Image (cartoon, rainbow, N blue to C red; front, side, top):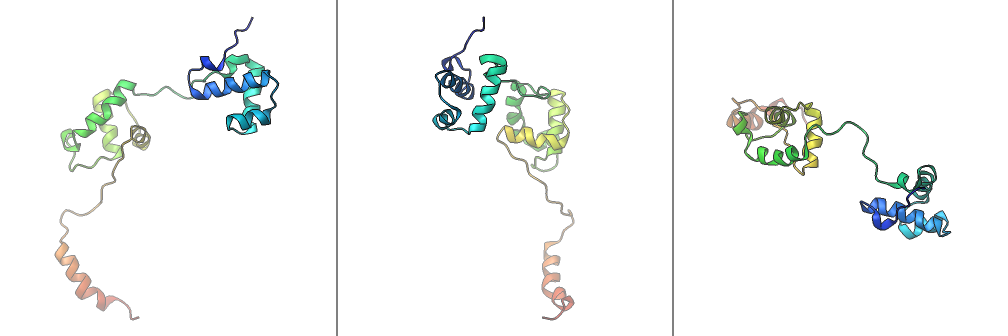
Length: 161
């Protein structure tokens, strides 16, 4: 005999909403009424009813997300903002700019976990942080010479109006 779950036994609000929809369906409500009552689309209710018919109320339970498990543990993710707060210079980088490549290097050094730099931005965003892109400028740049060239030489090179 299948154990039936009620919306009060839900592990999160989304699961509770699906279970409530099933309860309303069992009470004779149609899908449009359920959708209106729960503030969802009829399509969502239709999918939930199909899952419930095929798998019972267990089919409405929260599913684990597909894909590989995260490489960093929750504890390691919690440590990352503290590590980055030390500054880029603490890890031997020039300047205080954090880039994907630099954060990937810190993760590799501290936790032994290798991330492709392109994926680091997603991890950092999930933590509520942001990365900077360094400006590529020559160290020998002479601002006075550039200003002089723009004021004196550039007008003579520019074509007429």
